[in-house]
Length: 264
Ligand SMILES: Nc1ncnc2c1ncn2[C@@H]1O[C@H](COP(=O)(O)OP(=O)(O)OP(=O)(O)O)[C@@H](O)[C@H]1O
Image (tube, rainbow, N blue to C red; front, side):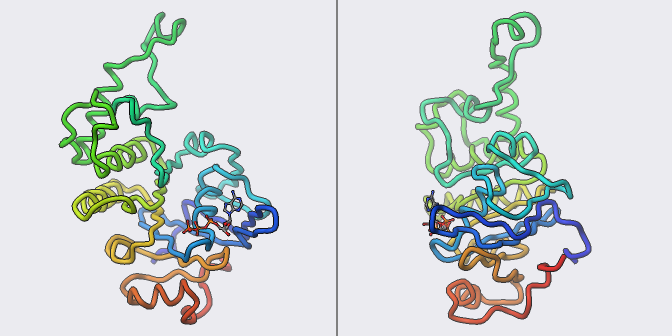
């Protein structure tokens, strides 16, 4: 089914070297409209490098990346954000001392309309608070009572929720999440997984990097298995077991057939 559609985000033959280390070794990647694509791989396989290349955090040495069929060459995460690719990083990149609303608008604060905004850069706090509240309630996150509360007073799961809400609110084409449940307890992970499902229900394709096989198998439509700097294969969670997936990614077992997307 997915092969009938054009990928939203596509990479071919991307290479990234750090000195003598080849983090990405002619890697391919495809994300299709409306899907949750999990990216799995052993430590050091190059998952983070792949995500950084797609989100503008690093520039690649070789290869090509396309967004909706257009070649892209981001030189900063801001450029990727402006193109509609939002990334929730492992370390979150939230500012603990700032409020929820301020965090949601960090780097793209709304200015007041008219003279004060235009000439004095006055921020429209009211409007940002209103929008933050709207976005968080859309995603069922209104257990966070006060939008002006500092992020440092929130639980890990709530913080993750703010980061996901921010990505969902601003990502117009793709949301990328790097280990969003890694630091969370069972209950908080549950909420974040539900949030991911909510974001998908709104039609947004999601890339999810995770080491947690139960989470991957629960939410992913497809799984991209990354090994030794490249895509080894993509599988559907319905067709394979979690131990198969782990065996592919560690090299204990041969992957299924030829990668059908490699030629596309
Ligand atoms: N800034 C860097 N400088 C030097 N080497 C790097 C850098 N970033 C990554 N690497 C190397 O590139 C390879 C791929 O790393 P990457 O972080 O992409 O893997 P990963 O699959 O995300 O690993 P993990 O699951 O452990 O986070 C590793 O050998 C790593 O040591």
